Image (cartoon, rainbow, N blue to C red; front, side, top):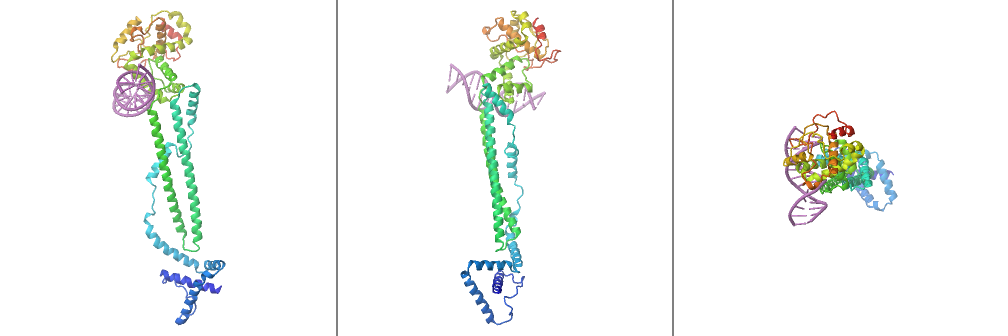
Length: 435
DNA sequence: CATCATGATTATCG
DNA sequence: CGATAATCATGATG
């Protein structure tokens, strides 16, 4: 054992000389005989060389034993720290500059976007309402194309999110595994070569950076996928599909039965949206389009107006049947129910006049609550129809827009008269129609 | 393929 | 922010 230690010391000395740090480290000479002649030195060198040459002949156990001896040598920690220091000095100067890695703005951008798209962050379980709507639509037999598209979009988004999360997890796990593996390896190697804890730390940092760059790629491609999906969805939306017959029916019904004030409230819109299995904004679109197009060319809508007026009137009649039927069913004297506003058509004032003449009544600006008035409209139409008015009159016939004012816009009944109840209040209608 | 119907988008306004 | 008006783009129709 003594022999071994001696050899190790010699080797250590050699390696140190190689590093030219002799000045800083005063290692005791291998053998005690300092000022001896060259003979003893030669002897030593020969001895060492011999040892080295025969080192391959030694058994593995022997080598392990020597290694152990080396590890346990009292000078080992000092040597180790010195070597680490040197490494530190030579290595750090090279790569010290590129260490700084401030939060990448692009990465932040990606993160924010993923968060905004609902890919990252908590599961957004808001699908229940839409799902229910879609289910209802399917049940009611509606086409519900938009709902389907919407849920399709959500499903795809969910898919993307799942992939993203699993990938992210995978990366994280791999990163951790790799980090611990490298750390163990380095720790292991630190027994045979100078590796300071700082170096390990730095290595871990490098690994993390590598992995986070991979993560950024993942995030980027996820973002791209979402963007593609989104654009496709928007395209799909742009590729309009006509609403189902049923939906237009419902919308028209509402429109013509509220012709005097075709501005559904938010709740009404929701209701309609649910009934038609379309979105609220689609309802808004529809009403926007309908209003403008109706106003632009009322003549074109007469038929439709009559149709739906009759339809809703039939419904209303069920509710308010008796009173109306008794007094008015057969009389074409349509009470002019009082427009809540006058209607100035851009190009069809004649229609207004014709309406007046047809109704055999003069126009009066009596103000009636809009809702009541819509009922009146309805009733008036059914009356007109039952009275035998038809399209033969050349299009510019009976359904005149009451709610339109002189500026070409619909107006609420300016001062909602005492009758505000939306539920048609048969009495008021009756009184109104009874002329 | 021309034309109209119609849902969606955009610009603008109050 | 919602309404309007104009416009786009596609679907339906003949």
